[in-house]
Structure formats: structure tokens, C-alpha cells
Length: 144
Image 1 (spheres, rainbow, N blue to C red):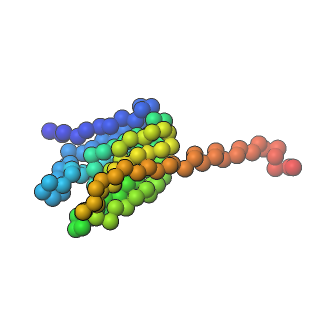
Image 2 (cartoon, rainbow, N blue to C red; image 1 turned 90 degrees about the vertical axis):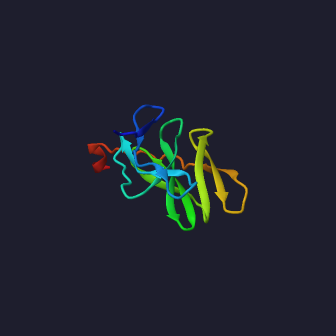
Image 3 (cartoon, one colour; image 1 turned 90 degrees about the horizontal axis):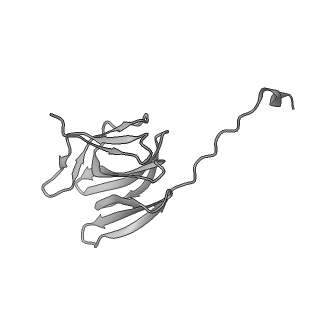
């Protein structure tokens, strides 16, 4: 019996399915597990991700917390640009977690960082503008 959870993008084109292997890595740790992307050719078969999956309002990005190692326990925050699957590195937390919280707009992500011995704080990341579409040249432009 599968107990996977699916988080749908706002535009309905993409989804992140959290596999049924989500659980604590160590006693009292947050839950991590494998994910599968739907609607985009993006896969991370060998990585574990946290439960927070946050799509931007325009579905261009999905922010994820990726487990880096358990001793010391630390995670990194990434944003995957869809549909191409471009990974944007946002933050590597030295000892602790970097967890996506919410998108304030289509380009500003708020996330929470926590480190051993420090108070948690909220920070933000501004996404890059979309890449310009390649210029299409007509057949006759070759003779200019």
C-alpha cells in the first residue's frame, strides 16, 4: 500500500510526488525521502528531500530542501526551474536546516534557516529573470 503525497503546481502542469519512504533520518529529525517529478523531465533518484515543497505562484520554480549529510546534520535549499529542470543553488546550511517557507511573489522566496546553537531566522532569495526566448530567424535573413 502506497502512502505517497503529491503536491500540485498552481498551474496544474507539474507535481512533486513524495514517495512512501519519508521518515526521520535520526531520532527527532525532520522527515526526508525520495521525490518524483510529474510533468517535467527532472529526476533526483539518489537524493533525499524534506517535506516542504513550495511552488512559485506562476509554477516556474519549485523550492526544495535537500539532505546533504547527517553528521553534521545539514541541508541545502534549491529551486528547480521548470520545465527545463535548471537547479538554482540558494543556501547550504553548515550545521542545520534551510527550509522553503513561501513565495511572496513569482520571484521572491522566503525560507527559514536554523543552525545548531542559533535562533532560527527567515531570509529571502530573488529568482533570476526568465531567460530570453531564442531569436527565430527567417529563411530570408540568411541573405542580409
